[in-house]
Length: 253
Image (cartoon, rainbow, N blue to C red):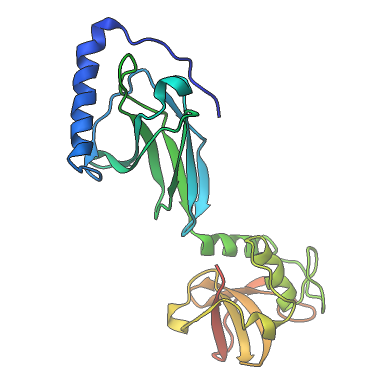
């Protein structure tokens, strides 16, 4: 994160900036949070932290650093804005802290472009920050992609990777990449997460075969009736059709 050098707004723009600030202030006072807002990229006084990728359902924090100096912007109103088909829409607003910083926590449902608008006051005119993109990735599909990376690695009883796997060692290894630490046991893995119906299964879900209390096989659902697994001695990790109706679905991510 870095700051933008402060500089005075030319006097020739005073009336235009004053009108812009007055208009935006009026919208916020009237409770227009959520309405599309136009804010010119004029002498940007704020810098946002970089683009990033998150998984669906995760939150992330957008940090803003005032480039005009803490003393000059403290107490100013900053609005977090999201790009829409109709223009920039304000989704949150806060006052800038005395250290010139501010943070917004967001939980976007889809990939979103964000910026921060500062209304300005005195010699500091209204402005918009740089734009950052929050890319939202489907976590389940990411699990499937990780599972596919191990195609061709051979089965070995008791192995948990990275070069050989048994069934629960394979699922344990894959889910660990996503912060889920599973025991090395199909039966114990079948007790984790949230149970969902077979009809509601989605890519990235854990499949456990057998019956509650004694599951004998574990796999990762890939969608369309297929799964990734490390099946049995002499067989490699592969994408296979679900071969038995006797399974349960557990949602871990």
